[in-house]
Length: 427
Image (cartoon, rainbow, N blue to C red; front, top):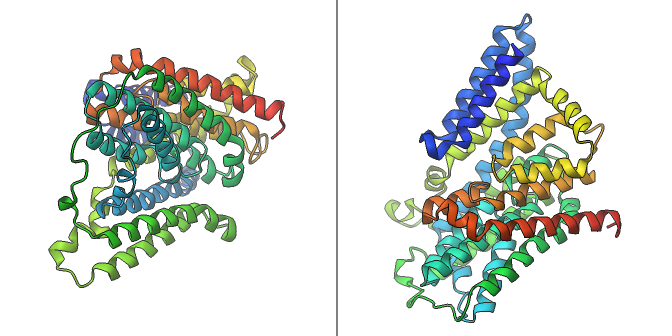
């Protein structure tokens, strides 16, 4: 039974990695794989009630991640609906090459820590399309956006799905992950930015008429209010968990309820057609539901392997064959450039016990960094890269030739920074 279970999971996983080749959504594949795996388990179980209990246990922990993402994505969509991100666009006016490159990199880096790497990449993609005239220059800057967003998301508990998973799973705490990985994440952004700044020659030509206020459906007060309230609500989530000890999704739902109430009061006198696109109901229809279903499906699939004892055995084998936790984490980071980092991290969460590696153990922090930044080495290695590839039609081999080596250098230097900080500086 276990052999068949592993085969089903492997086929499903392989189909997920070939999503763009076989033209089947990875969300559909993940859901089918999850149901088939658990169906096989319960069909071969003597005590079916015990299996139902295990399924309910895994459903509870996975639902925390799903609900957290649902709330966060809704808040971000609401900010975007109110043209809140125009606050960022208006501040990018320089035509100086060095200033522009660093501005884009730094904004992406810190924005992804507050929102998430996928959302910040989409925001910056929109901004660059309004700003940059030359296609080659824009592509190089989009490559930098991918690297910077993944680096920024790695040090924040809400900046990357895998870091959020580790936080919700109890492997890391918000303040400690920022303290231990911020410097490494910053270095993995700074080094590629220096390289890109050197590669881009001459003056960057900006498009004329960047601003088009006629397209705004909200006034300046509404844009600013929703932008700043939304950002504050997202930042409030880790604080809420620290104070109340409730799961992060509870803080996210509180934040969503607050901004929901504000928007209802703000637009209650407007015509229904006018306030429709500015409502939370509309934002809920726009969020990336397939991605949420993918996370659910792949995490439920992995939980089936834990239920039959496959993952603990894999942990033992990995330790015996490699042994070094640093090498394990680095390998996971590089593998995340080829495979999705969500199932890789989820597997390690189940393979390594909190009894052996308690909360804020340096292994979890290094894993959060490597899984978050390693995906930049290939354009298909992160949600940010896949989004840019799909929306801007950037070629896989163009990125491999122009950007992969830059991202790899940033990854290596970042890992070295983390290890030096841990072993020699005792920070």
